[in-house]
Amino acid sequence: MLDSGYALRKGFLLPYKKVRYHLKEFDESSPPINAKELFNLRHSSLRISVERAFGVLKKRFCLLDAEPFWEFDVQVKVVLVCCVLHNFLRGIDPNDQIMKEVDREFSRDIQRPQLSRREEREENLAWKTKRDAIANAMWHDYEARRAM
Image (cartoon, rainbow, N blue to C red; front, side, top):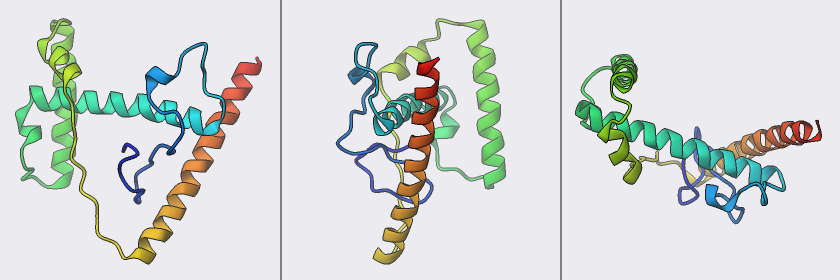
């Protein structure tokens, strides 16, 4: 998940620009009014959750914040093990200080591959199309649920 400051790239879905995005911009009296706003609302919510989760894991398990030196499949398993251990520790101490610290601070660095301008335009169009399809499907479902 990326914020709108990044360029659209293969594998990443950006929020719509110049459309309400931040959670605080939506409430019961001001729900999303179209597919793009709904997509941005859900994108924002998911992005915050993912960043917070990785922030907590990186604080608790410093090895996750270091340069990886394992094979990719091992890295995936290490993250999963850290998630299991974290959940176990949360069950023991629901007032964990690490969780509170991460609420105050989280950031991520994302490296982008170098593409030719033609490749970049083609990928951008494909990902914009995918994002539009997701947004429209979400909006259709949202409208159907509201009509019930």
